[in-house]
Length: 248
Image 1 (cartoon, rainbow, N blue to C red):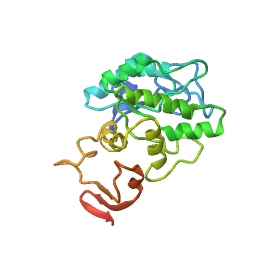
Image 2 (image 1 turned 45 degrees about the vertical axis):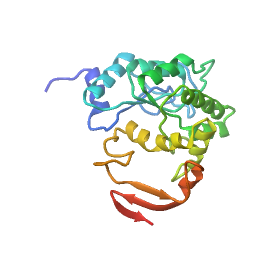
Image 3 (image 1 turned 90 degrees about the vertical axis):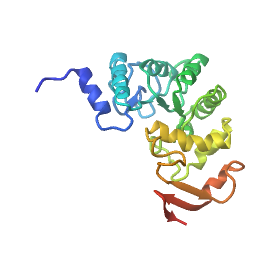
Image 4 (image 1 turned 180 degrees about the vertical axis):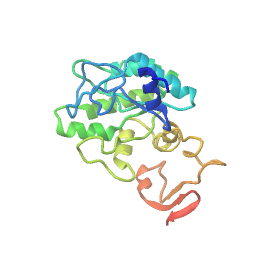
């Protein structure tokens, strides 16, 4: 048995048996982070070792060779740029200002849109962070999401459930849905973000996310028209899983 290099070891750790490897690009990460950074706000005061840009790019290259998408966690735009350089497929968390000026530049938004990189803004996370800290990350995250959507960016719904010390909404994420609409998303854009786009970033697009021949028959039937009022999504009448009625 031969010894493996650090590069080979990291590739194996990130891609072996995983549907969608997740790299972490935030200096406040609780797991191995992707890009070295000496700055950034740490919500829990945890700082972790980080991969080099070459190692991150190698992981992405190997995942793509295997037909697997790669997700990255970021919190500040300078790390977002490095993640895009590595070639990631989707980004978890809308970026917010770090320690010092760190605004989201238009060119980074343009790069994401052009490359078809999806974004999960996790607005509920930033609402929680801002509720117990003297920061306005909730407002900044919504402003940046508004700019991304206006530029034609693809959004997937996600809340980072249990990713912070504050309470998160369990079940249908109506709070996240409401904030996404406040940030300029239409009801249809929100619904697509939680179905087709969510399935895409989870690398399950061939099985889930839309009603189509050959896909798993998971169906949610609600009272009302969610395209008129998204609160209808909470008024569940019937739930089908794999074609079987499990509620209703």
